[in-house]
Image 1: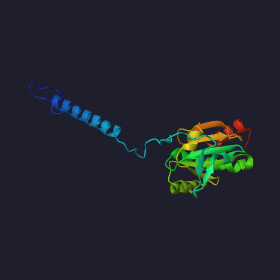
Image 2: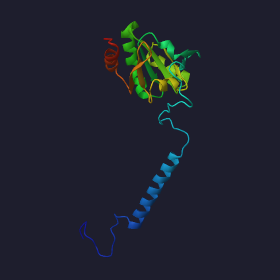
Image 3: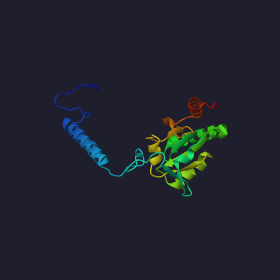
Length: 196
C-alpha cells in the first residue's frame, strides 16, 4: 500500500473525529464570549484604557478655570492673557506625549519671548509628571490640570492635545495627537505669524 491510499473501514489517523472538532470549536467560542463579558463588565479601567478627560459637574468658563503648580499654588487660566501661548496637555503614561515634548522644548528655545509655552499634566501623579519633565529636558513652565477642567475649557478631548491661544485668550487652534517640531513651527507661523 502506498502513502495516501485509503483502506475501506480504516479511518485516517491524521484526522480528528468530527465530534472532537465540533466540541473544541464550541469550547473556544464559549471562552471567547466569557472573556468578552468579563472585560466588558470590568468597572476598573486598565492601564491601556483611554483617559477620561471629562470633568464631573459643570464646566468652568475660561475666566473661572484654574491650574495648579507642582508647588500646590492655584493659578487662573486668565494669567495667560497678554501674549500668544502654546498650551500642551500631557501625561507620563502617554507615549506620544513623551515623544513630542523634546520637540516642543526645541521650538520653545527658538521662539524666545515671541510666544509663551505652558505644559499641563492631565490625570497624572505630580511626581510622575515632574519626572517626565526632567527626563525630556523640558524647561518651559509646567503645571497640573488635576480635574481636567482646563483641557475641557480649551476644547481638548485626548492626549496629547496642543492649544494655541491668542493674546486675548481666544483659542485659535486645537491639535490632537503628536506634533513634530516642524509641525509646531508651521502652526505658529500660520496662526501667529511667527516664523522660526
